[in-house]
Image 1 (tube, rainbow, N blue to C red):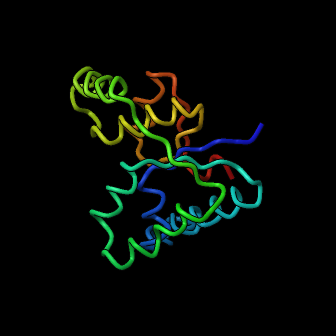
Image 2: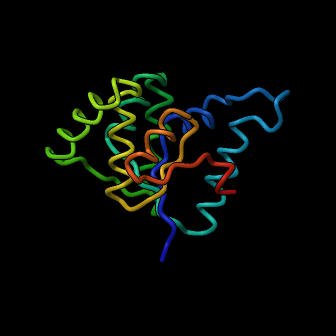
Length: 145
């Protein structure tokens, strides 16, 4: 069975915006690069959603976003997953239950990772903690390497 991951927006941004403090060890962008290279070489499935694309389109300049969009559209490793109306409603319930501890989009990422039976890859410590409560495996990229 192929390994399956749902990669949070922050990991793409780590890579594309060259994020990370080299004085703390290996910069986040290099870890993200190694993660994506490893997944490509191992032929794993990486799920993404319109919510990921929406977040990226808000943060990245339009020209850069359009260039990076090709990765999702043309790589056979990337599969788009969608949220049902019931899952959207559940995300709102979880948002309220968690006292708005994490963002609505993060809850959606967590639910989509669960739906895809995949590991959620993120750097968000709060999201990792909340994911455990909902039986979603969440890890940082370096935990996969």
